[in-house]
Each structure stands twice: as C-alpha cells, then as structure tokens.
Image (cartoon, rainbow over all chains, first blue to last red; front, side):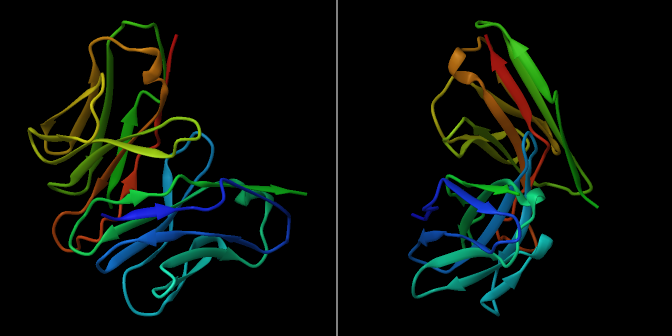
Length: 113
Length: 115
C-alpha cells in the first residue's frame, strides 16, 4: 500500500528566503505525485504534479519539485518566498492505474517579514 | 470547464442534531466523488468515495453517511451529530475515463462546529 511522509509539520522562513518542503513516499509500483496548497478556510488547489517524463516539474506561483525515484522523494522548492505563500502544503501520491490519492499530513509554511 | 461547489460554507450545530452537506459538480460526467474531513493537526481523512450513482464506499466507521442520488451530486449526512464530528469537510472529484492519475479537484470546504 502507498504512503506519504511529510517530515516537517511547520516550516518558518523569512520573506525572500528559499524554502524546501520535504516529501517521501512508499509504494511498490509506479506512482503519480502531487503537491497541493491550502490557504486558510479554503479547499485544496493543485500546485504541480509529476506523471511521467522530466523529473523536474514546475508549477504555479514559482514552485517546483523534483521526483527522485531512488530516494522515493518529491521535495517542493521555491527560490524566494513571499508573505502570500503562507499556507499549508500537502504532498500526495497515487499508484498508476489506481485512482485514490493518499495524502501526507501537511506542512504549514509560515513566511514572516 | 469543470466546477465544484459545496454548501453551506459554515455551519454551527448542537450535539444530537442532524447534518446535511451538499456537493455538486458541473462540466463533467460520471466523476468519482469524495468526502474528506480535516481535523486540526490530523491532515486529510478520506470518509467516503463514490464511483457512480448509489455506489458508496466508506473508508472509516463513523457517525456519518453519504449518498449519491444523481450523477454529479454527493451528500454527506448524519442523523445525530457528535462533538467529534467538528471539522472542515471537503468534497472532491476526479476523472474516471481518459486518465486515471488520481488527480483531485476540491470544493471550497464546509466548516462544521458542533457545540
């Protein structure tokens, strides 16, 4: 069965600093990988996804993530964060051919001036 | 384009009262539909999913039930709410045909407070 681990429950960072949110997954088959963002009291919005092809995936709002199969990771990065990036970020995985997503517990990104 | 709506956005209910949260999807046919719950610090918990009208799968035993009376309508209900039912409820849909990647599209969420 698939599982997702987000190692950090909270990541505080100063505005304009770089950030990396970590995500590791466990699966015995090929996977699809996703990052979602949730602003307070809103639903989840897709940031980016890896389905196949290039392991470096670019998403909205300047975020990118790299799929590393050998390390079973899909870390999310942004070179310079803004106050408006303050939100909760969820990593998710689905196994190829099986449609239910499994989510990590989320990482709260706190950007301060 | 596809859209998903759920309501009400916020709800405050006394313990023991009934619950009905509704979700509708537009712009697609025969979607998979899902209800998730978020409790503080516990991430997203899948409650129910449906692959078609009248077909409901429950992921966890609980005080809640779900129904799908129409292709694009998904309802979350309870006959008697408990304090532990408080949380943020999210409806979502995914494609069935033409790409089973699992990508989910979420509604705006419903905040339920049981007092």
